[in-house]
Length: 444
Image 1 (tube, helix red, strand yellow):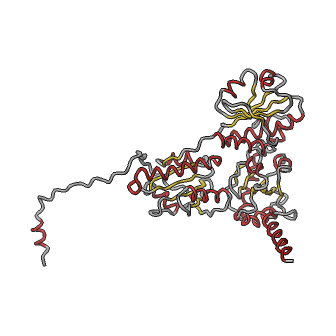
Image 2 (cartoon, helix red, strand yellow):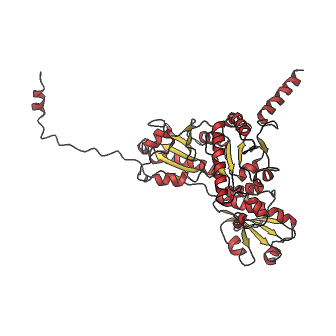
């Protein structure tokens, strides 16, 4: 009886973790099989939460998300994706932490990240503000429908993502694909092929997402194999659609993944990670350096290293090397990596609560949400890995950046790579001072 009781208890615990939303809730459960039909092809405004069942922040959000869904019922659609189970959907929309909330408005191919509060009232207020904006845009004649629908029906308004698929021919294939440095996913198709027509919107949407997320380093192209038979026969194309992966200097590889946009994006991001160099670890020399590095990244990892007089060049290089190794380990995240010397950016240290002791220190900053988290463990590969892994899965504790704004960044000179030098003390000539006379005046 005891094993049976434990088994039932274990099952109930598993169910309680995974059943964050149920059919009785007003939150629509979204999966790869229904996402396109429910969200992308809809004219409604959608708020979609990407969550993981084990994520503490996600569980804290659940009651407010349900309450907001009930309040917005019939006005704004509210959905949820278990991105731990449906990783392809999460990667398709660049989800790197939990919970992430995306707003799918007029242009469903370009959702925006929700930046508001996490209470039910804040979620409802944010949704209504976005809805009012959509209505005003429609009244003024701007597009209000799904660009996906227009693309599927052949209208001109939805070709925004289609343009990111590069048209490859017998004439330009070698120059663009074989001679270039980028990695290519190339679809060989036939205009009459039904499977090719089904793939077309997925390929186009994936092309846009991959272009944005890899900054153009992974490209998607298409060859009409019925017209450009030279390049098609060279690679032994026998059926349609056939997808091949091309890397410079290597034999092409057959694409073996799924045919949804999520599957294609996931494979492209894996290719990007395999081929991308590690991000540079940059010294904070000015406000421009911070903005350039952080504004285009979801997270900015900042190391505050001890003063050069405390560590010397060898010690500092050791800390920077640890950061470089971690930047390489997490390069798929496309985070920004920065460092500064203790005392060089006191306003930044104060806003992070580092201020004056405990070096080396590290903070991860989300400049869009003005949130940060501090490294609590050791400044080592193991300690930093644990810190970043917790943040990646939504478990790390965060705080609001001091003042709710980025602090002032001072312009400083770059480290010259050498050991520090103590300041030279100035020699004073005391020969003109009559010390005895001064002492006599002070006698009691």
